[in-house]
Image 1 (tube, rainbow, N blue to C red):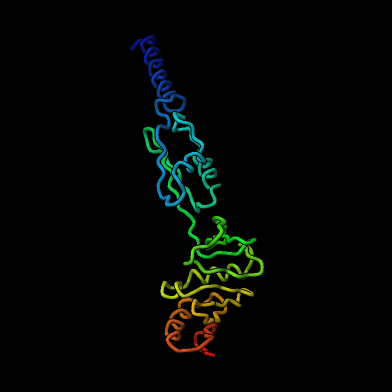
Image 2 (cartoon, rainbow, N blue to C red):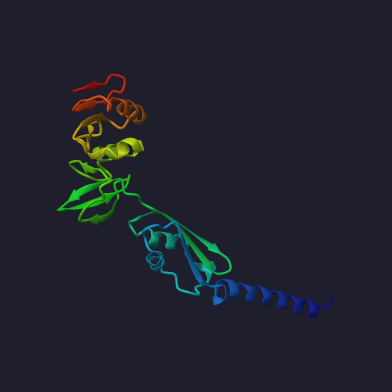
Length: 221
């Protein structure tokens, strides 16, 4: 093969590669034409797409996935976000929403918080199914708050519906106020399954206070 022919083939190959690179990285031909939102239940897809801030027809290959995830997670109702490219033109955003587990009184309103003490939203009135959390310094860095939320998370459904309020004076001083005005001294978050099992049985007996802080030796008053 002559040198000229080889050079021509080389130039042609380079042109093909260059054209392909242009199509992928710079051209709107393989740009973002659709943003698919999955996993959201209460947060509108339009809000997530707006927060993602990806222009239509932006080359899909150059979308900063980590940047999109970071912007989407600025929505405090979301616990996680995962962004993927789906060729030829879809950006897929899979999210998981935070689930409220308790309410905290705040200046005449209530804050809905999740298991990590993250405030999801502020409302005038909390959902009746959620217990009120009473601690001195509510927050993710407060040991009493963390212990109380861990206790709430360990309660089986049969007990969760009975709890009106959860109080914690310390990480080892968690107590439950039930809907029927009975009180449960829970103690720390350790051995939650044992305490729940014992308490479920004890509640069949009449008493005002049930102390299951040591599930091996319980007391009723």
